[in-house]
Image 1: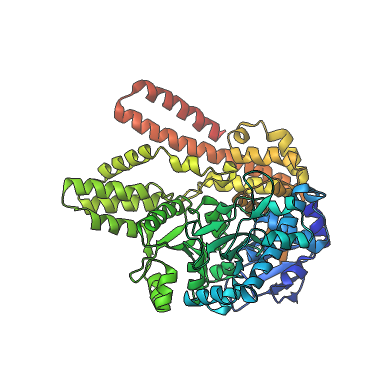
Image 2: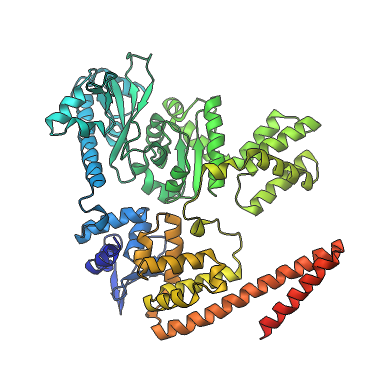
Amino acid sequence: MNNNVEEIKSRLNIVDIVGEYVRLTKAGSHWKGLCPFHNEKSPSFMVNEEKQIFHCFGCAKGGDVFSFVQEIESMEFREVLKILAEKAGVQLEEYKGGQVTDNKKRILEALELATKFYETQLWKGVGKEGIMQYLHTRGLNDKSIQNFRLGYAPNGWDNIIKFLVSRGYGMDEIEKTGLLVKKENGSGYYDRFRDRIMFPITDAMGNVVGYSARVAPGGDESQAKYVNTPETLVYHKGKVLYGLSYAKSEIKKKNYVLLVEGNMDVIASVQAGITNTVAVSGTALTGDQITMLKRYTENIAMLFDMDSAGQAAAQKSADLCLQKSVNVKIVTLEDGKDAADVVAKDPELLLNAVKKSVLAMEYFFNEALKKYDKKTADGKMHIAKEVLSHVANIENQIEKAHWIKKIAHTVEVEEKVVTDVLKTVVANAGQQSQAQYPVSSSVLTEQEASFQKRSDAVRNSLIGLIMSDAKIWKENFETQLESQWAKDDSLVQFVLKNGAESGFSFDNLLTNIDDERAIESLRKIYFNAKYLFTREGVVEYSTEELRKLVDEYISKYIKELQKERLYDIIKQIENAEQKGDKETLAKLMSEFTKLSQEMQS
């Protein structure tokens, strides 16, 4: 697939693609318009047709046609790749004759047909009376039933089998959709969903990938109330969110998402006017789901059922959000157990509850104060341990320090005592969160420091310049890969080594990376270094200019590393002096002298 990106770019004009979203007018050598990524009255957004790039002088967003579509549609790079490949008439190498892709396409087509079958059964078939009446009594209106494509699976063992077979599907194909169950004796199949209300679950693009099926009123409630599609080629329960395809544009617009527990809660919330609502739907919140939501917003308001199980799930989910550096609030209800229940009474009750949501840490802190007596030693310990179990998940060190100080002040103990308790809490947890939610492409996706070191900023500019030109990139791979400064930095090593594997093409490099945050970080580094944007146009360095800049930045980067090491030695010297460690002090002074001389040479 390495040549696909370049071929797609050569066939598409960024002006045409951007023009589908932004009204552009010619302005000298480039096109201009109002930026689609932030509110403005005077156009500061420009598209350069010659370079096939865009840049906004107001919000500083910029990139190529891929980054534009990815940003405006909140899609992953590979999703954009498929869409633009289709527009350009390019068949992706990875998918040519691919059996897996062919299977996925057939599965999605079968699920779409099945959804239409279930919809017909609800609106015109056996579900027209009883099931529709039940949905109305639960407060759902016809518009919502249509928008969310609710349906009905009639009673019977082979309704969907007969329907899909009549449409040309074989039993082996239908089995892969998750719609069937294999008989215990192995001699055939029967319908998984029988006499159930069907809630289609879609991916972010609106493709039906599975179902959550509720037992019909008066049906056999000895079975599970809800039955969900099992894991299939297209359905992975930890990677989908109910309602996301309907809510994603509203989530971006309002810059927060209301996360609820069930399908009915989503529909009820949307009817109440909260159109930026999604549900976890039958599974605990996962890291993959949070990553999906972060494409649209960094803010989550969480409303889970008010029973003990729901509140326990809310705490676990909120902790995961804190680990992922997401701003999370907790919504509580006083007049019902869930969103659907409250909306049925009065939609205003839900709207007011969402407005009164509080930050998760404030909620945990207040709940702990309600449960325990802060005046007793036992109460102090329980408050500290309970709140710190959540503080342990906070990535931002400043925010973590804030809560340590607040806990210490509230229970009237020294901050050092609270810090020691936090260490115990973390040790007892066994770093479970880190093991449970591993980060791919860790070289590129480590949490950014609260304040970036100067050496990191210089390093980023350096690798951006290196990636700007294939010839420069190749030269530095051959001459600098084994240099000490390059060997000591994992990101530099990644760019040099993977550059060689990608033919020293930035576009090809991106297609070999699976982690979206890594792609976003590298793209930003690349475009910031490669192009200089002015109101008159775009300036691009020549190969010779780049070669000189790279040499300058290598020297600058080494100097910055030396400064940081010198500062570290000074701190160690102060520590050794305080301890009276003469042997260590002598070694450090020798290293200090040697490094100082190197910096002056």
